Image 1 (tube, rainbow, N blue to C red):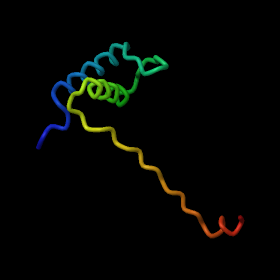
Image 2 (image 1 turned 30 degrees about the vertical axis):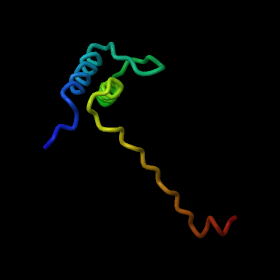
Image 3 (image 1 turned 180 degrees about the vertical axis):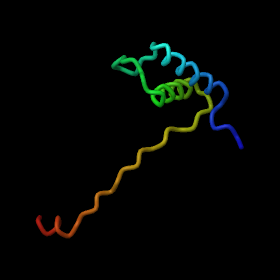
Image 4 (image 1 turned 90 degrees about the vertical axis):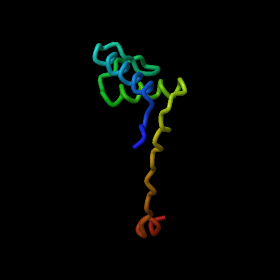
Length: 76
């Protein structure tokens, strides 16, 4: 099975995780200290993407379609 991320991208994630553990990893515009492991991984992958390393594209958010019931239609 092929690697999902390149070794260099993994190194970027590893660096972000170490910074998080040290308490020096900051998030985006707000500049707040990152405490979540998931957020640290996301920051590492985002930086790797920006550098042009082999990282899959971000997963798209799926939106739920709102079902319109007969009662709703009747009220209008």
